[in-house]
Image 1 (cartoon, rainbow, N blue to C red):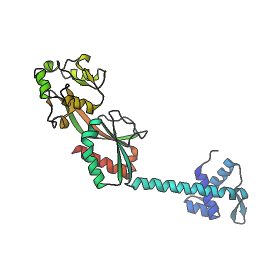
Image 2 (cartoon, one colour):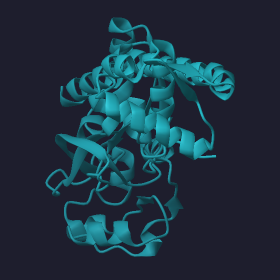
Image 3 (cartoon, rainbow, N blue to C red):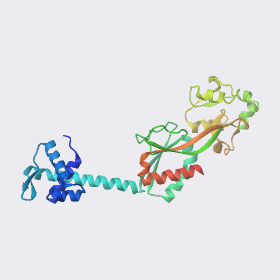
Image 4 (cartoon, rainbow, N blue to C red):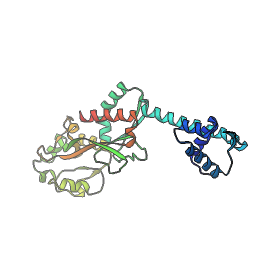
Length: 290
């Protein structure tokens, strides 16, 4: 059976106050409106809830039997409201953050350590994945992404513009003749993410002439790919702040144009009502911009 909770509320308050006028004052609405809501509930349920006694109202036997259930619904609605209000202001609880494997490994730890220091009541779950977590389905609360989302129910903030370059070990570069041009570097072996041609086209637009044979090692895991590059297995793409800081590798072609990579911080619209999400979002924004 379907019925409107606002009508049940009108019945409950009328039963507790004893008249439509008193119920109207308690609910902040006109007396006729309360009366219409109760009458509509009686019609929906096909019952009589009140009898007129003098200038007041008295519950019928049916009304008495339904009153306790209505009170239970009212208490549940109050608890729901209080819990929701508590969630919106409380800093305690879990926040799920989705980030790429590289960001989860190299960027997030310092930020999360600071977050836990200043807000120990906030628990953090990190989803390290190169796939875009579905925020609408709550696979994550906040995501660090390299693209701007298009879903209308998501909020996004561009954090910064990053740049990625090609890196390899000095020994590997020496083994392929210390290339100084894009044509010479094209003779090397590259580490790829998949068997598609997106990376071939992207590097081709920058002057490299590559084929599927140029990618003898494929792994979608960025951390594995980076370790392979540090062990001299081939040439790898990595963001500058990580690649330049790694002593085991160097830029394959220092003058080769970098790849721009925007960083977006994305969350769902609950950010505007959840204090906990807002605190974590702002700390991530500050840390990523630093």
